[in-house]
Length: 170
Image (cartoon, rainbow, N blue to C red; front, side, top):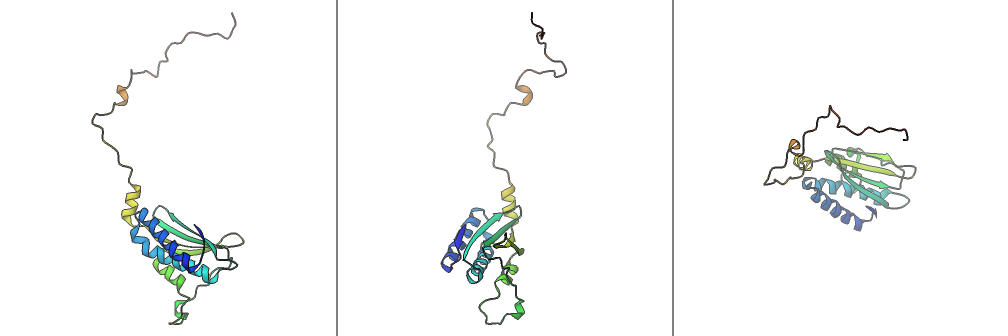
C-alpha cells in the first residue's frame, strides 16, 4: 500500500497489517510485525526527504514473513549504538528494536531516488504446515474406475491397420 507516513496513517497501517496476518493465520507474528512497521514508518515521518510518501509491502515467503518500507529518500539510515543513546532520549532506538524483534533486517538503495528498509519474521511451524497441506478432498461413495477399466486394451507394439495411400494421382 502506498501512503503518506503521517502519525494518523501509521495506526491504520498497523491495523491493515494485523488483519492480513490474521487472514494468513499468523496471529503470533502480529505484535512484532506491528511494532516493526510502526518503527519504519516513524523513521520515514521523522527523517525522509523530500516527501513522506512511502510504500509498505508484506510478503509471506516459504518460512518467513517479510515487511518492507520503500521511501524516496536515498540517504541510508544511521544506526546508533544503543549504549550511545541517552537514557531519556525519545529517538534513536527504532532500528535497534526492529533488530531485536526480527529474525533479520536490512536496508538497500532503491534506484537513484530512494531506499527500502525491511525485516523478516520466522513463521510458526503450525502456520507453515497448514499452508503446505493440500486442499481437502471429498470421498466418493462409489469408487472411481481404474485406468485399465476405461476401455479395451491396446497393444502399442502393433499399430492398427490403415488403408494404403499413395501420393501418385490415379
